[in-house]
Length: 394
Image 1 (cartoon, rainbow, N blue to C red):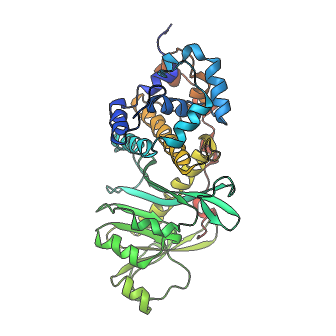
Image 2: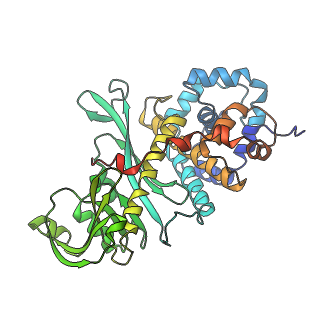
Image 3: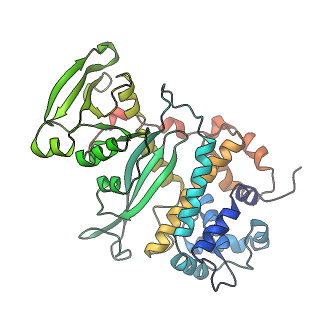
């Protein structure tokens, strides 16, 4: 029987701690700190994410109950006090954990580079969207949203090969989704799939000038002039494939180039959908399928809200909130890395469920995860929703 390291310690071994130390040094994270450094803080917060802790008091109680195992978890302190953890979350620069999460994201993307999207497409495909997390205005006065409401937004660019978030911007609730396109650095040759809340012709033209492609739903009754029509097979649901120019003073000035307009009919919902793209070479039936993949970012938001601690926060300052979100993202990516490295067939949900119950055991992590009953634990696959049942604009 395996009697070595704790499951928690084995999971943490998949983290590049040399990179983490560089992130700490970059922002002087451990300056003037004698006990409970950034690594201890990260491990405590990762433990909270993996085991569904609800509060700082909850974290403190659980870790004190296993006080003799703290050293074996990699936590180099005799006891974890909630006041110490709260102070660390408020004062340690959140960019330490953001940079570390980005390094994990790069590792995960390399592992998932050969994932099959189910489309005959060699380009990288990203889904861009945002989700809102509601907060109490009196507790989080810095996160302005409405007159009597606070919120933060997670603007996320999801690489659909492996569903890895490659870009995350945390803002207050007032920042409109489309403004994040000003922050994004376009990748030439990549596809950006967005809903019609991101329809801004000037910003889309910027993507076009950067030699990136986009697929986006058109708004109703937008004005255009048809230049060419191309043959489509209406048995596939396609109704038209047109090359168009925008009409209207502002629209034609903001996007002076040609666009491709594709109309699609979904027989299951009896609805028509109109897509715009600046790619003129892909077969027309691929465009609706590309947009269908956008639903993965919605599932990503649903997953992290249900299975990670990002809806209730352990601190009230902006720094504490961003620290918790970025550590939650890094834990999500860590699970994805473990899944790929150990060749686990179970879903991320199943892996997280198993880890939450076994963090203090000394079983081999590989044996534990490969020996699980996937059919019993893999419940979230049945909860995926049909894209065209829930297509609504912002």
